[in-house]
Image 1 (tube, one colour):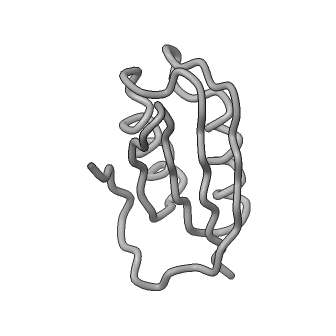
Image 2: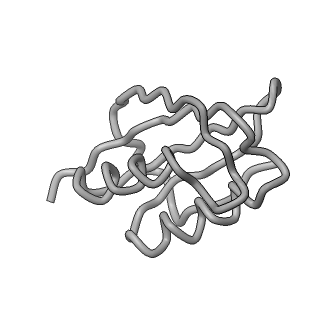
Length: 92
């Protein structure tokens, strides 16, 4: 099955609300590889790679996030898959 890679930039109340840990759990449940990390200006970046349907499910989840989050905007860019990605990690 062909792999796709999406980079999501999530804005809103997304830091200090378990967004990264919840994103990691969601991605792992979908069988995706990639990472999630906090960025300056209270943003989160998530990189999802795997089958298109699973990546799209992860992106849809990002629009809501965990219960304490208040997502205001999700920007998505598509990139070529990175064959070196293994697992789904929280980056610091």
